[in-house]
Structures are given as structure tokens and as C-alpha cells.
Amino acid sequence: MNMSRRKFVRGAALGLAAGAAAAQAQTSPEKGPAPLIISTWPFGKPSNDAALKILLDGGSILDAVERGIWVTEGDASNKSVGLSGGPNAAGFVQLDACIMFGPGHKAGSVGAIEGIRHPISAARRVMEKTTHVMLVGEGARVFALEEGLESVPVDDREFYEKWRATHRAKELKKPENHDTIALLALGADGTIAGGCSTSGLAGKLPGRVGDSPIIGSGLYVDNEVGAAGSTGVGENVMRYCAAFMIVEFMRQGLSPQEAIVKTIHRIVESERRDDLHINFVALDKHGRYGGAGTDSQFKYAVATPGQSLVLDNPGV
Image (cartoon, rainbow, N blue to C red; front, side):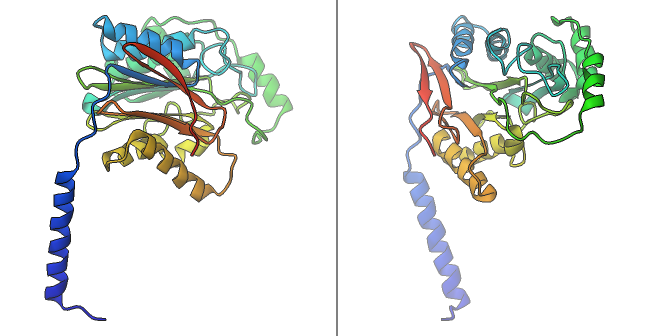
């Protein structure tokens, strides 16, 4: 059935008016407690507690994120973050990290860096002391050393040459590990920041960089909306810019939990397989938070004044 132009315009106008009225009728989400810290995995809990203490003692949100992540990076029992993480296929450890500060969309990142005790600090120096966003490999290491960051000797050439002589580049059949600390913080003043650090996929090809240091994939912060971070198999996150997608869904009005679930559904519908290993945490400007993933064993940690919890993956 045809519709006249006049009827169409009139109907559209009425629809817009009704939509505007409905939007005005919606109440803003209730404010949650702040400061608020959320991070991936149970090993994020000590990092949350350290970050929260810094904020409650009057420290900056960037100090809270950086030093909170230090706790996990410095944990010798952790085999997926920091220098104790699993080596790559050639037998040496390469680290990735990034940090974002909501105001001004400031960001810094390092990839495939070797021998630096706290790559999150190198990422922060990139953000604060250069005009760049990301440094990688030997250039990132030299920069970190020039900044006086704590390091250990690096002598990987023998490992690499031995590996290259006996192996051909090939895809891993099964990830050995893929845990990352992504830590997000909301200050009492509404400022948002976040950081991410990992030793990456154990057994990865030398030079492989996953989603963790990629702004918009492993981490994204928008001070007007919220923040999101990821853990899992980076290739399945970075091809969808998943952290950015979660924040954009929150911008459209979804809660952090709803935004995470919608993002996972989007990726699963595209991939049509069940071995994705993608997990996320998120918070918004209102102090709401969420966490979920495709891995049943995924858990996440949350800290606010008066409580520090490890929560189960609610599923998707």
C-alpha cells in the first residue's frame, strides 16, 4: 500500500516526538560507589586493592592503575603477566602493555618488549613523555632503559637462532595460556583510566603481538562514557576492536554487562565457533560494572570502599 509524502512526514514527526518523550521519561542510572576498580581474573584482586588504596590516600588515578598492575607484573607465581610469564616459541619472554587516561583520550603502549620489569610503566612513559602512542621491540626497550625503568639482562639471540634453525613458522594448535590483567578505574571525581599488561600467548611466534597493547582492542577508555578491557586469545578480540565496541554500546545506553554480552554475541555470530576464548570487564561513568566471557572458568575482581570481591562469569 502506498503512503503519501504528507502522511509519511507526519508519521515520522510523531515517531520522533514520541521517542523524545520516552527518552525524557527515562531516569538516569543510579550512581554506584566510587572509587571503583575492576580487573580480570582472581589475580586481579590484589592489584585492585593496591589501586584502591592509592585513590583513597589521595593519589592520582594513573598512579592507581600503574601501581595496581605492578602487583600482578611482579608476582613470580603468575605465568601469564610480567617477566615470569610463559616464553615464546623461541624460548624468551616478550611483554605487551598499554594505559589510557580518559580526559583527552591519552594513551601509551609497548609491544614485544623484553627485559623490562614493569611494561605498564613503559607504556605510561610513552603516553606522557613522547608524541607517540606505541613503541615496540628493541626500540621500546631502549626507551624504557633511557627512562630508568627497572630491567633484567636480555640475551635472547642464542635462543632465537636455535629455534629458527629447527622450526618453521606455524600456527599454534592450541593456546597454552592467554591470561591478561586488564584493570579499569573510576575515580570519585568521575575520571576514568585503565591499563592492560600481559606476557601474551605462551609459545607464540617471536614478535607476535596480541590485543593487549592495541588501543580499542585490549583496552579502551572514554571519559564521557566508560571503559572496557579484555583477556583471552587476542586475535579473536583485535579483529573486532572489541573494547571499543563495548564502550560504544554503553554510549548507546546499554549497561556495562549488557554491552559486554552484546559484543560477545556479535563476535560469536560472525565466527560461528565455540573456541574463541574472549572475556571482558567494563565500567561506566555511573559506577556500574560488568564482566563476562566465553570461558566458563573466567572470573573477575571488583573493589570499592568497603569491599573487594572475586565474581564468577555469569555466562552469555
